[in-house]
Amino acid sequence: VSGCENIAGPDVKLSYPKGLAADYAKQTYYVADTGNERLLSFKWNDAKSTWKVTVVLAADSENAPATYITFLPAREAIFFYSTQDNRVYKVGTTANAQPEFVAGNTRIGQHDGMGAEALFTNNVKMLQTMQNGNVLVLDSNLIRVIDPATNIVATLGLQGAYSIATVANNAQEKGMILYSSTNTPPTMTQLQQLNTVWAVSYTHLRAHETRH
Image (cartoon, rainbow, N blue to C red; front, side):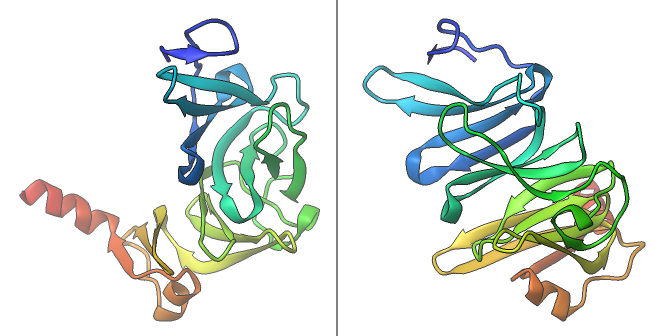
């Protein structure tokens, strides 16, 4: 990444980055620089026309590397999944912040519960933030919901999810789920739990792309 300040000169070398999150209010982007086992923040400096880069989570942290990340504005925190110990953590946005445990266990599985009672599979693909303050985890093809106030993890009844996205629109939040058409489509109750208005079959979407 060229045109940077801080760290080691004008260039920042990334290695297998796997996560990206944004704090649009502060014009700051967070990158999980997984290969270098660190979490970086990039903030644009108009005066210097450069990116100010800060190490949020250092490589020598016992909880690195961070992989999939999301930013929760209400708590000024980055939530990340660590492949090292199969857990979800949160960390502040200041330099060399100390991560706090949220949920998960070194054991692999799929079990709901509070904190260490919850188990994640070894196939976590994505984290997303909801406007109501919850954090969504795409764990294998299941959607898990973390309540940051209680650290309780719950699994929605929807199976076969390929991807999830949330888009805030004023006070209303909309979202999208891509799911496999080989699975049962999500019910209205499940969509209401996510404040989701779209549920698109991944197979149908691919077929639509092929026709056009």
